[in-house]
Amino acid sequence: KQEVTQIPAALSVPEGENLVLNCSFTDSAIYNLQWFRQDPGKGLTSLLLIQSSQREQTSGRLNASLDKSSGRSTLYIAASQPGDSATYLCAVFNAGNNRKLIWGLGTSLAVNP
Amino acid sequence: DVKVTQSSRYLVKRTGEKVFLECVQDMDHENMFWYRQDPGLGLRLIYFSYDVKMKEKGDIPEGYSVSREKKERFSLILESASTNQTSMYLCASSLRDREVSQPQHFGDGTRLSIL
Figure 1 (cartoon, helix red, strand yellow):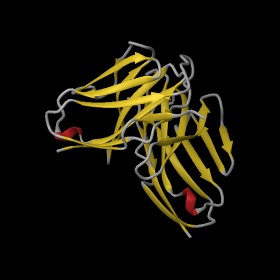
Figure 2 (cartoon, chains in turn green, purple):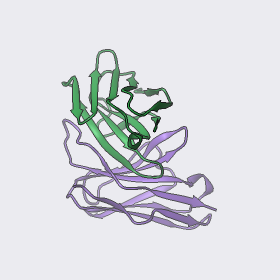
Figure 3 (cartoon, helix red, strand yellow):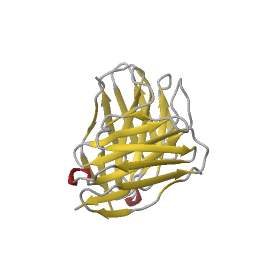
Figure 4 (cartoon, chains in turn brown, cyan):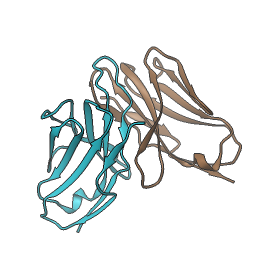
């Protein structure tokens, strides 16, 4: 059974730091991995989607990598800003469980001015 | 931009009431989903639908039903609300792609309290 883990659960950094959020999954048979952002009391916004055949995806200051064989993904945020404060969730689309995402619990990020 | 609209941001209902949560998307997406989100448990899939009048159970369907009479609208129904259904409910939609999934687009959520 696929399980997705995000470490750390919470992170607090000063503005301007480069930071890395981690996501690990137990079954490497996935179609893709997605990173989402959730602001307090709001829905989720899709940030990046990495197909299983890809190694990384970039969008602005965000870069997500995928190492399927080791069951890991990282979300790199460059030059963090207070506006980046949110919860970041990763989810894998399981090849053996089509049409359903398996979710991590998220990392709550606070970027302090 | 994809727009997924949930009818209420906050809702307070009483135990035993029948509760309707509505979700509408404007991008002609085939797939629609209902999740609930609880602290420490993350997002859990309640029901999903690939097409009009079609539905499939997710991981926690008990106590819920759904309706999809039109492509753009997916309704979640709590048949007889109970206090353990107090939660944040999130609706999402995506294009259908049987080989590789498309990103899901979410509404702002409905925070439902059952008293």
